Length: 193
Ligand SMILES: [Fe+2]
Image (tube, rainbow, N blue to C red; front, side):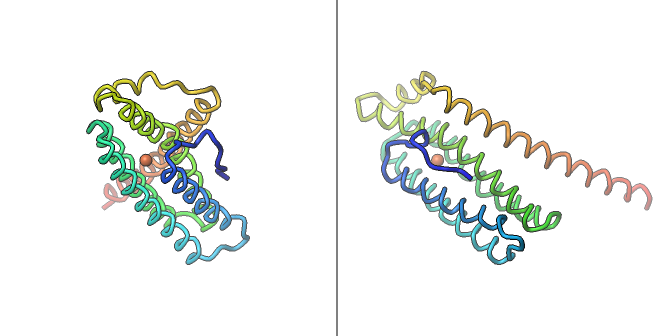
C-alpha cells in the first residue's frame, strides 16, 4: 500500500492535502482485495470515487498553475498526464473486467494507480512546485521552466521513481502482449472464413 511520506510533499498545502486524500482512497481500493469475495459494486464505487476525486484535484492543480503563470510548455504536458491517467485507469478497468476476476482487477488497478501517482507526484508535481517557488522569487516563467533540469533528487526518491516507471512499463508491455494475442486469434478466424 502506498503510504504518505515527506518525500511526496510539494509544500503546497492544498496539493499535499489532496494527494493524501488520493492515497486514502487508494488504500480503500486495496482493501477490496484483502477480502475473500469483494463485491463488484464496491470495487466499482471505490474506483469511481477515486477517479472523480482525481479529476477534481487535477482541475484545482491546473488552475493553480495558470494563476501562478507557469510556462505553457509545462502546463500542457502536465495537463496531458492528468488526462491520460483518467482515460488509462477507466479503460484498464473496463478491459480487465472482461478478462479477470475481481480480486485480480483490483490488484492490477491498485498497482497501476500506485505507480502512476508515485511517478507523477515525485516528477511533474514536484517540478511544478519548484517552478512556482522560482517565479515567486522573481524568475520569469521561462527561466523557472528551464531551471527544472537542475532539480536535485535524493537517492530514495530516484529509486522510487525508477521502480514506478519500470512497473508502469511492465504493465503496458503486458497489455500489449495480450492485445497481440487477441489480434492473432482474430486474424486466424478471419483467414478461416
Ligand atoms: Fe499533477
